[in-house]
Length: 239
Image 1 (tube, helix red, strand yellow):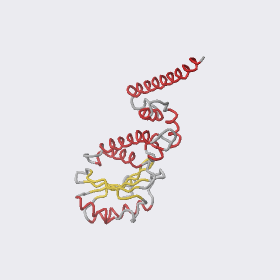
Image 2 (cartoon, one colour):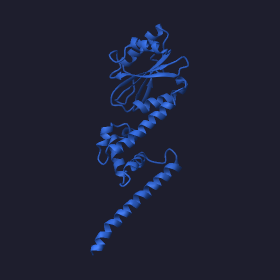
Image 3 (cartoon, one colour):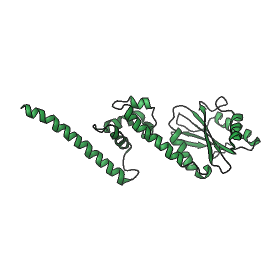
Image 4 (cartoon, helix red, strand yellow):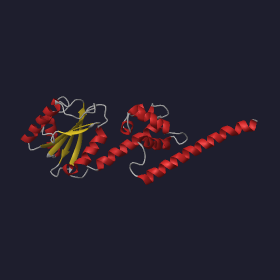
């Protein structure tokens, strides 16, 4: 009887490991052979977490993360401390997810570097969306371009509402002259998710555009990004 009591838990443990290994092998096969839509969003998280938690079933953790943060993008862009503090996570698992978000940002940024920005517009929007759409604070950036409309500086101006307290027209144009930029694109995000421009967004854009015209600096656009999409003030006829 004692021998039976000793063997039963071991067999269950071995069966559990075999189940996890078999399931992960199937996920791996689907990932490598099935293309971009081979895995559901929670399965992507499940597979990523398996590297840091190889001895446990990571599906419940993945599903609970999706429930808490709302989406795959929401999880990958979540605050690192919030991820680390989630049940059954910890810093190692949080880092395994954050490095994927970092890789996605760098991959998207590579699509706009060393290329004419206006001719790679969708790549720029993809980069800005990945980088800013899920921020919980409003962030203001100015993309400075040279005569070939190539990016020479991605300047993080500050965090907060886009008004003259955060971004002053004369300072934006002065910076352009200092680095030899001939054009620029204003960018900021709306943490609410709705990218529609406010009156303040429109007013500050036109003040910067007017200041630029006096010194030969072209304001190509002002792009607002949010979880619900993006808006170009140029395309809306607001510049």
